[in-house]
Image 1: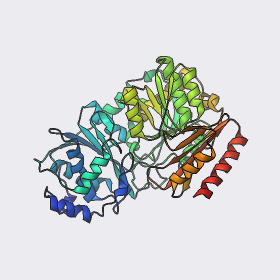
Image 2: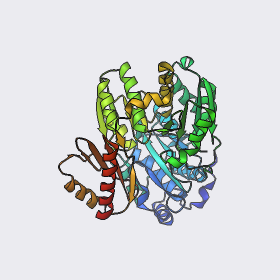
Image 3: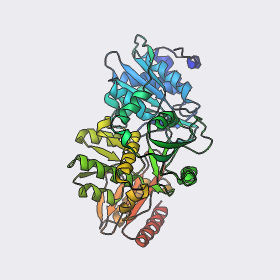
Image 4: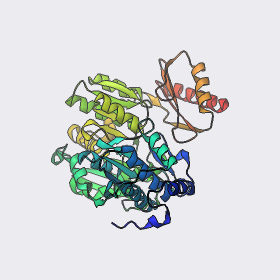
Length: 474
């Protein structure tokens, strides 16, 4: 493969001084290094110069023998150019590149883990607007690299800009789409699935490449929304956590008299479900649903859920003979804990789901197929499957854009000290009839508030009370 746009970066080789100059030229911002990945606005924060340095730093960080690094990318306008320069950095540092082309993040995870490669980088900004881009980093076995597990060291290498001279690596192409999807489909008896009418919204983002295969393999009728790739996301942003981005999907479900709808985010590692009535199903309800059925097959296993999730998740896990494990938010932390404790399944409120049988990485396709299997086996409508979980009243996440997050948390802890306090991720305080969580964003000057109560009136009162306190504390 010919790497074209490299010429804009004058320090193409391994001279330490020119690399340092390039770092300055790139307008390097420390803020692009987040808790779970590297992300920023293109080209002011994330650009070709930085991509090159990250490529070199990543290989030097792994530093063992002749490495084979898998690289995938989403379909944003800047992704191709960033790919070319990231690859150039990897090759200059002596590693080989396995080019997946356009891919979802789970495809990259699968490529690294299933074929025993040494690491991987997905070029993506996930659900962010098109002017953003970034990099998700993996080591062997698709183990995520975040703050505390290597991202800080990579950041230091980028800042220092000094790299050992190596014999250049080579680039190879590899197609994993069919292997990845078969890896998921082979877990199920698809022929026994009930034919359903399903609407799938891929937001003109990377998950659109999955649609032809899903239509071919899944019984029934699939109605795709925005399957054509367009990195400017002209119809809506690829962020299904925002209600406004699901509106067209909801309407299409009603129009097509569909049994179910799903939406993927920008890099295809998150999936949101919508029932036959056009109602969005909370991510923690899907966690509870999947957990209940998995525990019938494998009783006594651990099931992970994040700290934002409804109490119903813990209750369902215990009722079905499982061991509930509450976790902090964030894919790199969750994957690390699931590996350490050999946890069967994990789910986040935001629609990220993880399976031990899939190397502990995000498993949106397997979860999608599991829901179809459950519908087929029970004969129930999607809304009926989760009806019993509607026991409590949850506020969802409420965002407050402000600074001084640490002081606000300290004041809230002091005010609500009579409750059961947990600090695994921000501040969670549990009382007999309600609980709240105030969690600082890892990437923005934002506090996220979640509240759940046994009665709607109590939830509304506490939402008003806490919102007022947070705004007045700032």
